[in-house]
Length: 393
Ligand SMILES: Cc1cc2nc3c(=O)[nH]c(=O)nc-3n(C[C@H](O)[C@H](O)[C@H](O)COP(=O)(O)OP(=O)(O)OC[C@H]3O[C@@H](n4cnc5c(N)ncnc54)[C@H](O)[C@@H]3O)c2cc1C
Image (cartoon, rainbow, N blue to C red; front, side):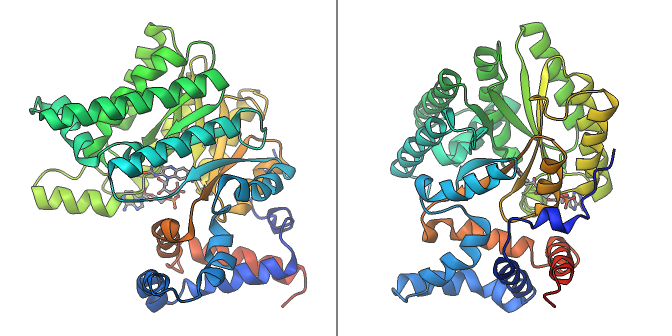
């Protein structure tokens, strides 16, 4: 197998020289601790005061990491990805206050995303976050009730019924339209409620095809036994199981809450333990491919190579629909474009939403890319390699 992620010509073929230079300057900016720390607050202030900075953000940070402000505006980005063999997963990235009005708005938007994905090959999946359509505290209380029989209030019961009917409506719509649907994973103290409802809906809708995918965070301890249990449950129940495998995005929050409330941190003690479990999860799913389909949501080169090798070893078609890779738009193009060029199934989360409302998402991307040793360093190294190859520096 000759898959390599070093080929920057393939990785950036879709970028013009000007685009590439712009991306280089943007990732360089992330190296400034001042800008990364205060940038989002200053931007918010400037937008509140009506200062004309929307255009600048839209052409820089937003253009790098988002598709557009609406579904329609995002389509050209999806089309460009599709022309390079990559799917797009519209991600409504608005993180509003948890009010009934916002839940109803997000629910309406998610229905549109699922319908949009129905007949457009550019969109192989849709995705949603449970906290976009349901109250966080209610999900935490239901999780406590599931774990240790804690009481839920009448208010929780009402909120849960609302959430449940929205969740089921999205699954039903996805099933009727044949759109595969990811449920994102969130904080551990609300996750049991999310898991429970997701597996119940898999039992209803994943009979002939894998429509619904739950997300497993491998930075959590004991996720492998949990996956084995769920796989057996699906086998006995006669339905298929979909997993999106990720490492996990809430590490600091998890540690802080565990320390504050005095319980054991549910996250692995080292990166290596997370990596080992992630790679073990890939193998577990591969071995159980009679009932399991996966999407490896990762920017990790080693894990991506491991899955690619597993497919070769099992003589499985590279584009077998049970195996997908996914990265975020604007990041790790060297993985996405090289995998796609070698014939694997690849998709990218394509966040969209009004600029002001996706600022929290953009600020997280800036934070994550601020460590020179981490992702930003890697992106900069790759972009400068390509700039050199094109003799632009
Ligand atoms: C398509 C896609 C979908 C995603 N969906 C979700 C989702 O639904 N829910 C969610 O929580 N996240 C989600 N993520 C984010 C994901 O969980 C990771 O935070 C992110 O992708 C970085 O991990 P990595 O595998 O790409 O790469 P790497 O850079 O190899 O790994 C970084 C990750 O390793 C783990 N880690 C780092 N240091 C340590 C340590 N000391 N001890 C233990 N673990 C450590 C953390 O999870 C950290 O994010 C998604 C990512 C992608 C690409």
